[in-house]
Length: 68
Image (tube, rainbow, N blue to C red; front, side):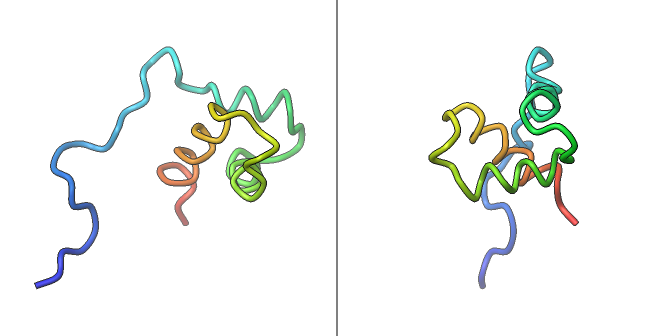
């Protein structure tokens, strides 16, 4: 029988309180006028232009905050 969905046990990774809102602030400063989800998609399309930490924040936003 195939396993569907999340295979690891435990809760989804949580954002530490000090890091909450960090990507949203980055988007407002660096991509004014864009929504957080569209900025996350843009960052993920051209990962080479951005730092590793911004790509990681964008990836988290895409995976957990920008679901349709």
